[in-house]
Length: 113
Image (cartoon, rainbow, N blue to C red; front, side):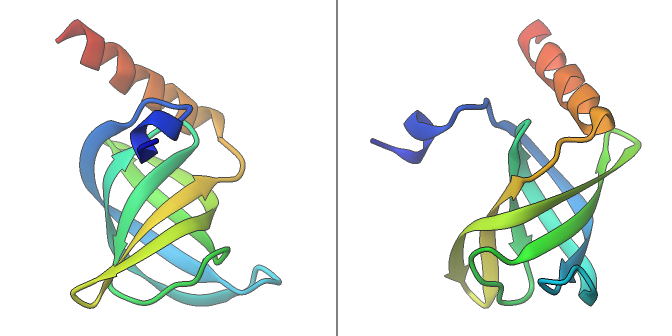
């Protein structure tokens, strides 16, 4: 079974810059920086980070979705190292209403095209 077959939520191909904060287990900030998201869904997203991360690391993100800044936090669900970058799948732990609203708008636009 492919990753796509196992997904419960539709992925939207959307590339954007993301501000991230890597959190320590006690939620104190460890590091901040910029990353790139390449796709997103209601419960997760794919990120390219310029640093190593580990499974279960916690990240806080601010995304720009079509001009709307949205903050989410999540847990690293998978990691793939490639050319000095970490490609990660981030499971969003709590979906803010603003994020859900923006995803629904993207899905609606996608089906209208």
